[in-house]
Length: 376
Length: 73
Image 1 (cartoon, rainbow over the protein chains, first blue to last red):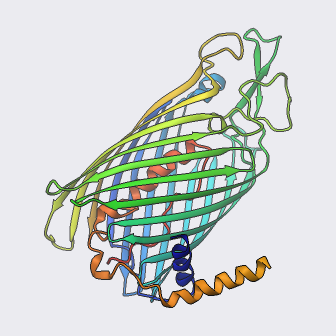
Image 2 (image 1 turned 180 degrees about the vertical axis):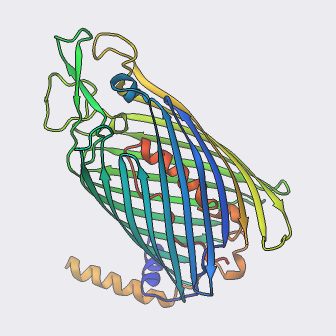
Image 3 (image 1 turned 120 degrees about the horizontal axis):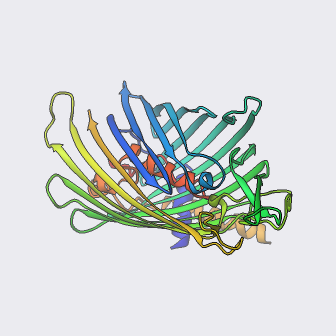
């Protein structure tokens, strides 16, 4: 069986059994998203439109806004509540030639203290009678980081990402995907507002804060395998596993399983469970023994040891089953995700205790998406 | 010796290409073409949720599809 798999891959790579690929569907999605968890509320619209131009081109545009209000646990203990807005714009063009699909895209993201710009290119090729799709991608990002209230603060961050993918028809009911991505960052990687704490006998609470300091380089690798299986009736199950490791000492495992049910006329129901666990960065600590205890300092909970569970419930309703005007299909969708995270070492400083004895922090979040989709 | 064995194995596998036929024919892919089998059924929703996770987790990458489908269309 492994020999067969390797043989299939080699046949694919040598270009045998080629067959024409297709451009993505023409569609319009209008989404409203709402996130509430850990003291933060994020909401806003997201609009995506994709349209084919002639036989060989397809263009896509996306507009996304995050309006962020509140104060996370990091802010509650060291700064004040805030409100900000992030606007993301992206555009891409796909070019189809035979069995090859070439995609080029740009993304911009703007906040009052952060500007992100990126360019991406992706090539995918269907081979082996369209049973196999091989893809390669590259993303180049360049960010400018500021700090509110500090006009002299200006930092930069460069990012390179390389992607490889393979999707394979296994049986007439089973699809599988394998994905690999390596990402390399250079520049200012920490958060300009966040701080670490260290033991300080002169402070009434027993500890004091100083700015965090991350390395200026990070390289990470992630590999994922996922599959979807069509059940004997109109339903499918899916599963995914991803392994992640980086040179800061973080390793993480992500597992996802789900079920999609479509036997009720016009309805599609989704249920999904996701489990995530990660180790801490080598230089991370909730409480350093003294000021400037290490060359690198981090107390971000995102780099700490923790586990997370997520449950999703989704429903999609087909608005019409025959074309109306220029619209061939339409649906309204409601998706709810419940996310919990339990941090093993990140302490909840809202509780006054002997430094280092505070209870571990945990959060739960509600994420709601309501969106309309139209195919034309 | 190991290099020779590796080349021999590669040649055998490449030679085997002529004997490996696609075992799922296009007319047998009706179930694979069903939208419920798509890895990326609702890209705007999937992109948003992935962003929610990326911001809050140390891990990143290998989340998107390989850019292709099942060749069902």
